[in-house]
Image 1 (cartoon, protein in one colour):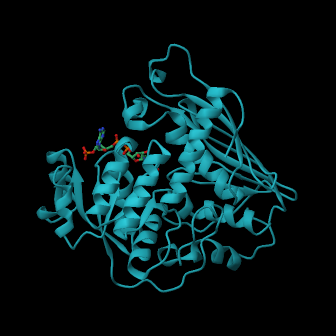
Image 2 (cartoon, protein in one colour):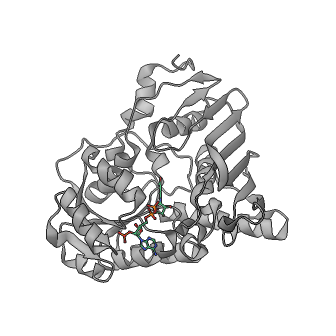
Length: 375
Ligand code: NDP
């Protein structure tokens, strides 16, 4: 049953798919983390920004590259990889020009390639800083996957490098470009639930051993960095304000080789200035979990799955909310392309990524000292 929140279908369309994310006027800093993107400012134009994918792993090959065919403002033009044979094959599969295949060693050569406007860094977080800085110095805009980097210091260096080069930096927070999440943010901002009082967000899965995700140098941390960041980022964008205090506990399954270097289960509580409290969690030893709930004075909102690749379901006051479909991957890329081609601020800029990492550092600190930490 469609939602019965007093919203007409037309309003719904204006609020979600009708936002035309490819051309949205781009919001200010995500410190306005609950901001709903504004309505479109211009019709899509013919020109497309050229994207180079750096790091040909699971996410790049499985989700990002196949979705360029859905983009209106972005085209795949190059690959940058540490695996020459794979790079050659992938380039062939996508019909890329052989001259547009680069390695990590000759990355700087992209400077002379006018086909490339943006480098999309999709490697383990431990080298996001290096590849982002080098790409910006080569004169290219950067989209960098989450988590932005292992430390706030790394994140700041990435922001500084892009600013110095006069280039845009987007963090790959795809859920901000996903229609159900956009609709949930809109409901929170427009007071459809009344004043917000409480948020719950849980994300986790069962991680196999032996991946870079369980090696601290490459991952920067455990479940919190990789999947708990969805709970954290959602709490911020649903609340629409920044937390002032965090309290956290960490528990690792004893003698589990996966948790020698990184943490397993994190429970963390964020206190926001308005009085909203978010109770969030993250786990690497869990059966799959991907959800958030918002409790307001006059209504509740539930999303499950909330931040998955697809299949999102949203209810308000326990009734299903009908949301027009949209491709979050294409919308995310087209948003940055539109900012490059038409001008505008990025909805999920480096500062948004930095803010999450700052809070994650406080989460780790709180768990270590056993007390709340002020932000
Ligand atoms: P994978 O392990 O599948 O791929 C990572 C790729 O990075 C490798 O294939 C490799 O590509 C390159 N790479 C460069 N240096 C290293 C290194 N030292 N060790 C291992 N790989 C290296 O990881 P994912 O694709 O799952 O994750 C990559 C990034 O994307 C991470 O930041 C992750 O958090 C993020 N991600 C985001 C998702 C989202 O929904 N937004 C979903 C999944 C991941 P090559 O061989 O071409 O050099």
